[in-house]
Length: 461
Picture 1 (cartoon, rainbow, N blue to C red):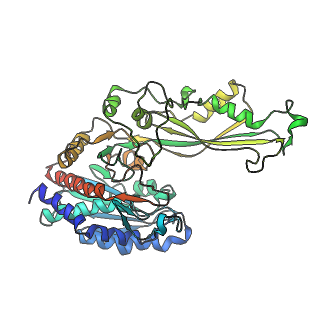
Picture 2: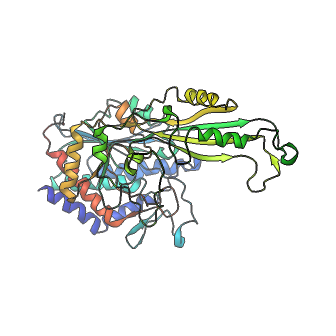
Picture 3: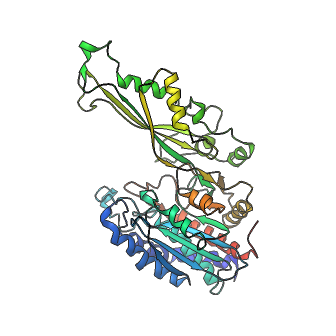
């Protein structure tokens, strides 16, 4: 058997309907991790669906309980030879709220529905569809090689990603030996675009910054007191403008990342950010000067105002409010100095005349990515191009956030993400879906990658 045979088997799995039937069965598990009543379903997905599927691939598996008791994990392993490469693969079986009754044309979020080139269902894009593609590709390679993969494989399935992966880091740290590997390769998030295969090497970090101006209890008549009482809302918007201006440009050096290197620019030189018809158009004259859209999205920091509140917007009173609050979020790339950031913001606002603005942080997560010099990057890019005939976009990091730091920092692995969704997939919203042509291509991409991994006599160094 050959590489072409493995890819053909993956394609046949799609065309026969077998893969879609498998995915429909997995979508039917109502694994909403944000719903505390779904504990039985979270465990059932692992015990009733995943463990039999891994057993059919000649993996041994076990349930690993989370230290907090919130959501279990599944570890699965297939070992062939001590000298061949070992890959660690990750997926999450939990999903966000199903949002029944909000889907177009009355669709049931817990069943897959085909409409044109789209396959609808909760978890199709995030993340049941994506880890199911990777498992199907393992099956295709195993069948093509007569019951062997040609490499060692480990798989971890998490059931708490949608609640922030609270125990993933601790579980991986406690199981370092069991998860030891040469490469981490997994799938989540969207491609750069539906028609371009994508590799990303990590993710941006994030930190929420709360700004509060509390001047007095209650409101006071704007006619009787206007001009002599400080307005907390006015103070707050002006304080924010000293951090990020009216065109989204960062005003405080502490918020900025290191200067873009020529290496990063070269990776992003052919990356175009082009929204589809059902996605929002890119804003003109927005973001850091001198950077392309791809560099702003994948290699720079952004400070976004997520929410603001003062007074009652639904029933505004003719009164100066006593309080104003805002929640901002800094999305940051590797190299940004986060330690001391809140103190730097506080000192900056005091220096600008805003000592009354209280600053605090919450909900932070780390930035991480694979070293650009890793030989695994070229290996993966060459494999994808060989399968599809298209040069994949290689992004230094995903624009959003994933628990990549657990694998890159705690386990010390080179990390490569191969996403099988696209930006317009409506994940975390009604009408979540995957594209059928993209799904078929993704199956062949992963079959090619896994075949090529089995061709390596030893891990890349």
